[in-house]
Length: 377
Image: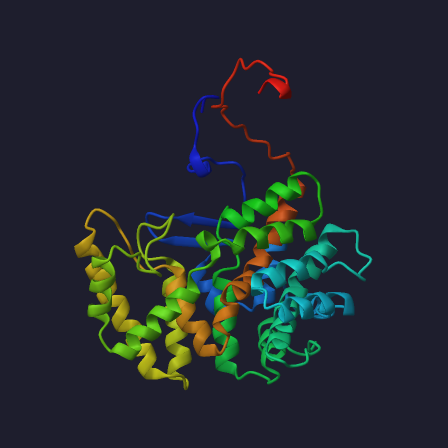
């Protein structure tokens, strides 16, 4: 690419090599740490997925116990962080704002000055930060994390105060694994840019949260749930889709920047949601979700035959997280609880073979201007 060519949004530009995940948008394949997402998401615990991204292999039983205990021992946050989260809740700041504030303060009281330590601390603390903020919003006291619970189970516990059942834990764990990493997306790239300056991983995590906050990156599952509930109440999926398309509205949960076929994570989460709802969820609501997907895909193909608008990850994220009991306001922060494992793995990968990220911009402004004193303007 010449100095004069511009790739808006860096589209099509390769800026790094990674062993963490591979996306094939044409065939709808996602590989994470060498495993098809379908295999990893449905079999691994979240701790195993993080270890895989960090070490490029699965842990032995002993290593997994040690790694799980290490993460669990880093979950607690100090009074200073809780005070920030309490104020964010009192001011009714959005959950992503609270996570950004909490992430920036996550290293308080740790004394850590080591990238690996920072990475594990941030991953461990994210669920506590989100849950603490939410309980303050709900007028409840925050809970201390439980070190005897796995990462996913502990997240649900500190949110609700109740030990979750196996179906909820497996559903959430599948979700966390399915979205832990996804190439060089906006939030991951933002974090790698920060790390490339040889800044710390806590700063990188804060930058990634800031990028994820934008609705073009992390804001879709909430609106998808609103849509699904409206369709369920009306009982008319086809009418809803036709009305939306006639008004020229975007149908949330369909289409993706990379995938030209059905998002492979949608398939994983669809199966996870089906298992969860069969185990005792709202079966009628899930029937609506299934019916809506079939109708929407068909009508989108009819309405926009020149575009491939297939189901994306947000569609079944909304159905699954809502069923598990994650509040809608926490959908994006729960995504961050998952993706932070990938963010930290990318940060460590960047540091291992670092080069400062320094792209160019093409100047299109005026030249040759002459200075005029202020009294003559």
